[in-house]
Length: 142
Image (cartoon, rainbow, N blue to C red; front, side, top):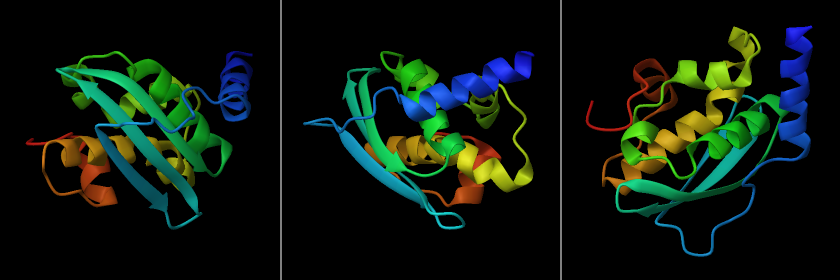
């Protein structure tokens, strides 16, 4: 029964994604593609001081990848950069609320990976590859 509620939440975020819009003047923009299935996310962040003032995105793909980006964007908008940068992959799984098997890991974490590389770009650092981001979960400098 609880699992059905989480599945409904994922479908709701997939059908009615939150913050799915491009920002007119983002501080940083970054895009990533999951080459194994074609899911894609372009992420815009408006950073004001030490806060993520606004988040916008566009993309396409499966329900898990798009719902995860929607859930993340809803959770992170207005948060401090410190909180955003401390986000771990487990937090994304918790937001989704359903078990994610190995074949869907990249789908579930595409938005997370895009966010981490957008923050690296903001800090003037190199983007990391998929495994580096997912294994460490670090935003930058860790």
